[in-house]
Length: 119
Image 1 (tube, one colour):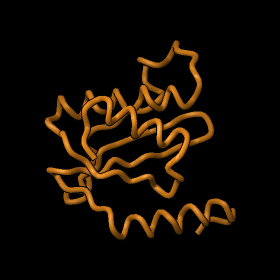
Image 2: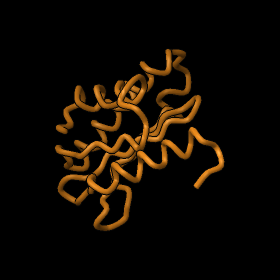
Image 3: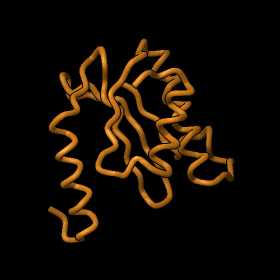
Image 4: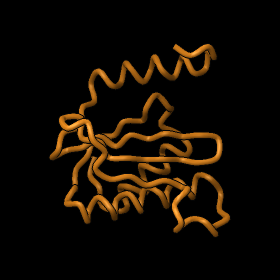
């Protein structure tokens, strides 16, 4: 475990959630990682142990945009949904990765729903 108590708390929650959330090829897991400045999302097949689709706020599409982080997260969710549709993925399971379903994580989920993903 990490030395920081806030990080330990998030990891405990993450492990507790991951006991129940499992992504398959038909219904991959949408995993979210949030740093101080960026947000990353990927669709993972736990059967294969492989990332099927990914999107982040560091992509070239967002290089020149100056918007608040929560709006950026919503745009990342929409981009991920577009990539998922191209890959033939419609339904997913959401893995908030130990973060509270609030703020940027919630915005990313809403953007993915607006983009057409079902979860």
